[in-house]
Image (cartoon, rainbow, N blue to C red):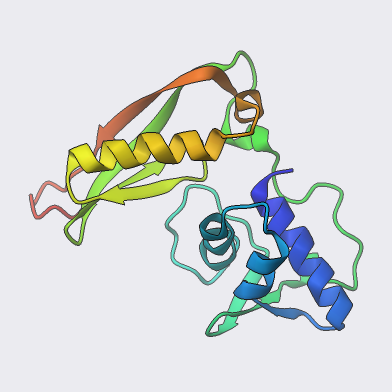
Length: 176
């Protein structure tokens, strides 16, 4: 099950047990101890939240932020309804169907004194003060993301490469 599906299922379960549509980020993090807490928080507050800034190539319209750390499940995923047959997208949405790819594509931008890398195929963002530090952090983040997972679920070979693209604005101010 993809992390966004686990986050939604957990939010629905918590809300169903309470008899309400709201929950806190900490509720979801505590209910999913087998997942990286940062990944869970990122999914709740950004990837699965309709009123969060658009920072990720894949977003799901599961929740709306109603207050500091508090969210509400939106009506298509409401606890009073049966879960939809297909939540939003399968892991294959991150990778084209067909033979496994051997490359993970990453876009790097300069932001507020840091180099920030975001993967196009994986739900993964990391940063570093220098490009060398960023690349070390990126390799570690990819290893941790794929640890204990079948790379084939992401459409990847067992030992994928990382292809890095650096983007910079034409004004040269470092803001892409």
